[in-house]
Amino acid sequence: MPERRARRPRRPGFLEPGEADLLVGGPDPAELVQAAHATAEALVQHGRGGDDAVTARLVALADEHGIDEVALLWSARPADSLPGALWRLYALRAGIRRDSELMARAFEAGRHRAPVHEAVAGVADPPGPAEVRALADAVLAGAFSGELDVALERAAAFCRVVSTGWALLADDVVPGDGVVREGGPAVSPGADGAARTDGADGADGAASVDVRAGDGASPGAGPPAAGDDLAATLTRRAADLLRTGTQLEAAARRWRAGTLH
Image 1 (spheres, rainbow, N blue to C red):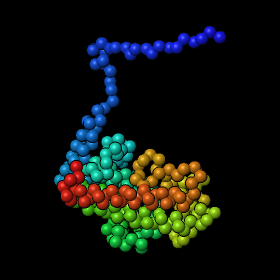
Image 2: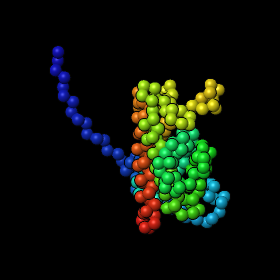
Image 3: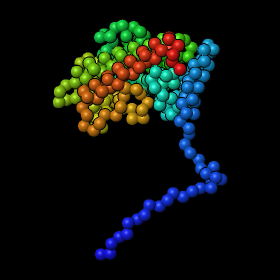
Image 4: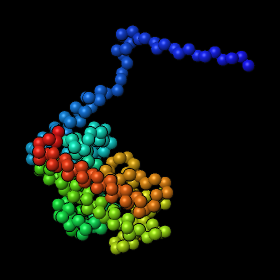
């Protein structure tokens, strides 16, 4: 067989100045960072006007534009920055609204083990799906119309109570069955590996609630890997929410110190 000639590397082509000017690149990372911080500060300042209608629009920002749009703007910023902290508040609200039944179940399970955090969170008693959704709205509204550090601490306390609940529910999973049966509606894995609560709302007597958040909309939630059992999923969610709670507490301290920007 004839030997193949080694290919000589081709020299890069050169563009004329006019051609180079026509090329459109990606956004400048520095400009994205500046936009994230500028918009976060503008929203917080805008909400300080005390107008209930303005506060309601700010709370519903992700509902109107989509949580993905908020994520594009703020989610890349660190947790100890103003846009990073606001992103976690919006994302937590989105996760609560999507998984309110399971969040309420976990809050109920964890509140007696974390009474101080329960008091700080301020969820109405008994804590059902409607109550945890109301808490999410109140916390986010307070971030704009009240004191931001108080809102961050309430959100952090909620995360800690729910994290405790996830851990307790994981401990109560029946080995070999994958169902939590200790009080209240059972929490069991669905056919696709997602967790579900069994109640009396569905046509077949079961109300299925997916705990996955593959779109990244909920801090502390993530899609269970194939073959994951329910206990592992709940344990992972507990760890994720605990980390989010810790981040929100740190952000609250920075806000009081005047260093959350």
